[in-house]
Image 1 (spheres, one colour):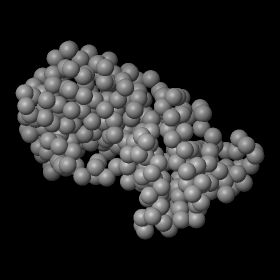
Image 2: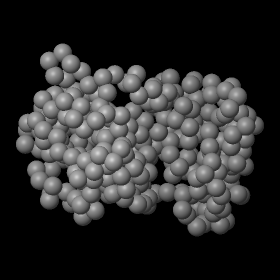
Image 3: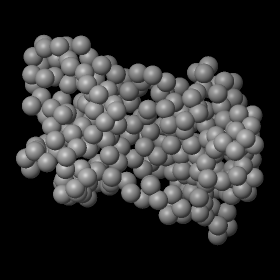
Image 4: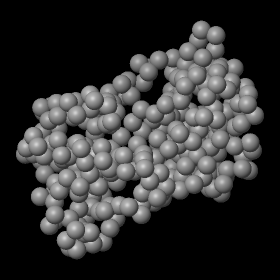
Length: 290
């Protein structure tokens, strides 16, 4: 699943080509149309296809930004404001091309689901191989409360105080620290890969119950999460499975992972252990992480 660094690179890829353009038409794939007709919310969630078009066509793209693992696109038509909220799911992606055939990855070219026809002659295409992603069209973010529950961006000044305050929340106190930092209410955008990398960097065993961490250890975990996410952005994200940039290029963070899906610890040469924590595969060094 694309995490914060991957979503950041998708946002950076589409932003300069679509901001300021007007959406002249929207085309849905047969899968989206069929799903809606069968009562399934395929890609387009929380709104009918007709209403989605009504609140998208002839709207101008004012701003594109990222919040945690979501891409948000602010739209304006005269005085009417709307926001597109998109989550890429397991294998979703946006591409900006002149024609569908210009999408460089065969599977993404084949599994397109929404085409936004722009006034600058570009197509903004949402493709999704597994169809777990979504696009919503809302008047305000209050219509999608879960996005309002997300912690401050990890790079913001408010993020560390917020993170530390979550150790006082009862439901988090007896969680393994690995599971806690995957909670978007605790820290924004940290998915499974970067959680493993952060805990390795902080030398903290992922099984440790959160309330047992000292204040210094809690701060170290936070700083290591930020470090892992910044490193992920620097290397263009992790292309282990289906993730690619908006231009079809792959990230290289997978070549710089220290513990996730590794066999041998780069520090002590011990075998990397695996475990299931919070339903997620966890990779760690039993010798280096305490």
